[in-house]
Image (cartoon, rainbow, N blue to C red; front, top):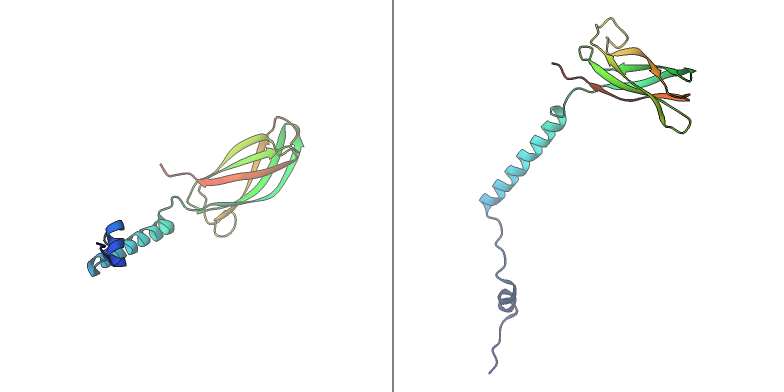
Amino acid sequence: MTVSHSPTSSLANRYGDPKRALSRRGKIILWTTVALLSLAFVTWLAIGRGPTAVSNSVVSFSVTDATQTELDFQVTKDPSATAQCAAKALDEAYAVVGWDVITIGPNGSDVGSNSGKTTAQRAMIHTDTLAVSAVVDSCWIVPAK
């Protein structure tokens, strides 16, 4: 005697019953959760990523001798904020031969350009050996105490 099974019941016996589709209420909950998480992410990107931005650009550098390099650069930031910039002097193999952190304090709107947002800075970097270039590695806003 042979027992005949339909293909659907044979698959159900082997793999289990098919999954039920999400109910209307389940879909609403899922989409609401996705929307709230997306809104939270966009809010974090807009305002929650930390302190305000600061940028810099190197104007020039001058190698005084094997013990000192002078770096002129500009910093753009909120005039009321304090920033710090890491300046480094490099040798011909791009190895760091001097390093200094420069603090740029708050300033008035009459200082520098762009209503006080951009100010000129000069760093005197003491070096171990002769440098061939100088750069600003990075700048950041110092959190208020």
